[in-house]
Length: 107
Image (tube, helix red, strand yellow):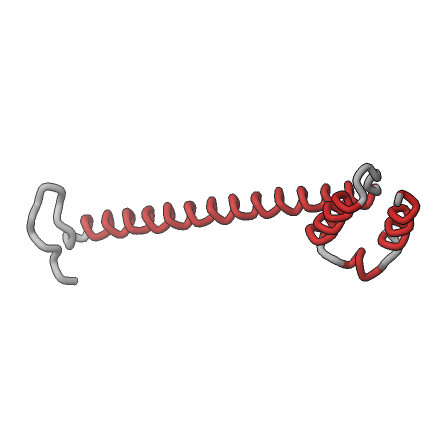
């Protein structure tokens, strides 16, 4: 069984189609391999694929965080713009002062 496992490993690490698969698919293959060939050490290709998946996950998390931050900054900019517009309208006398219940004057 060990000889068969070693043969499978040798074939997979040379298989260009296998190596072209996404890292997550390669990890899944090697984890299935590990169940089938219990006690056989996994090749370095497995550890490399796991590392790549982890890097991809970190990059995706970082991108999501950056997108969230950009969205927050966009909302803050809209609020600042709205605040500037309100101040401009107040200076022009077309926005009710705080405490006033009157409608803003028409432009």
